[in-house]
Length: 144
Image 1 (cartoon, one colour):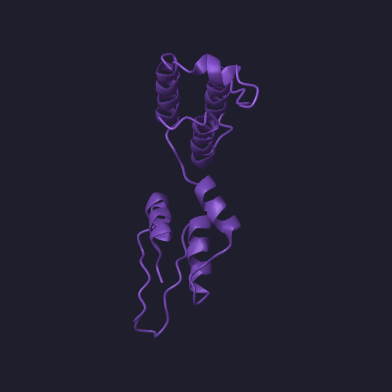
Image 2: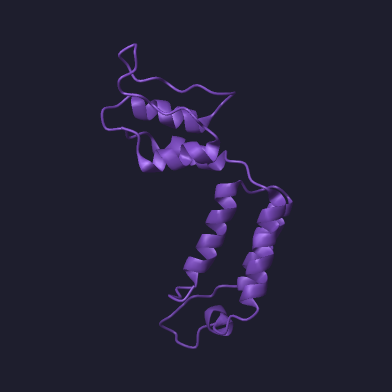
């Protein structure tokens, strides 16, 4: 069965074919697209089982293969830099006064690393989004 997660992956990858259970040939169609398309491979692998599950390695490769606009990514990181300039708890997360809470998060340094990774094309779309998510999650702050 076509899952919601796979639908999102397919839309993000530009896949337009949708499986049809009552295909005239009596089988579900396999999706084959240009070159090595990990999203298509994940889709095809999901059809090979009754459950629709497929290996997580294919899902990760699909997410890592999605294209993105570098200038948009840079502007997003610039927005994060501007936003965190007003983050009142920055000194707390950098060096917590409470010895029981060890955050030690260098927000400007991490954002600069992410920004340079985008500029040097080190990151895929998934990887730069994951880096931003990891930064925000590491702050352990329910308001962000």
